Image 1 (spheres, rainbow over the protein chains, first blue to last red):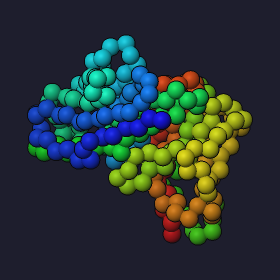
Image 2: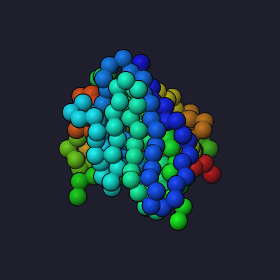
Image 3: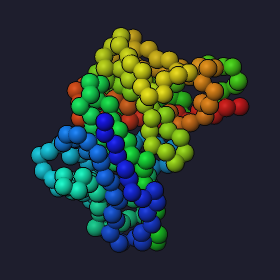
Length: 114
Length: 114
């Protein structure tokens, strides 16, 4: 069985300051990991994915995430927040099960203050 | 542009009524998925289909039904047996049902009870 825990349900930052969204996972194998972003009343957009090629993964819109096996973490970061980054972010674990089913974290709402 | 189209964007259901949510993709993906999202929560899997003419129950299939007669289409019917249908419904697809593929999402349908 696998699970994903997003450690903060809400994060608030000021525009231009760094963003850190925390994610821990539990898995009996080395999983694939994803970060998705969801703007209000929209679907989920893939930000980045880790599939064991490199531990530091760069995504779209300046986001990146680092896979740390020893800490079972996959935190999402961005050096400087923009107002347009305000959204809900989901950390997701891929499974080894047939069907490509994913396990979603509960989400972190990022608020960006001017 | 390739993508996933969900319609309608907003849908209202009367008591005792079945309603069908449409999901069409032109990505030539084999696998398709339906999720339910409740406020402040992550996504829960309703049904998925690995290939045409095949589908499997997810975690919360009770009160829902699907069909997969064409590769590009995966409609979801919310039946009167679903007692709490008010939610945001998201359709997704992936290239295949091989594990660890990213899923691509539509913009969702918001269902409400009249």
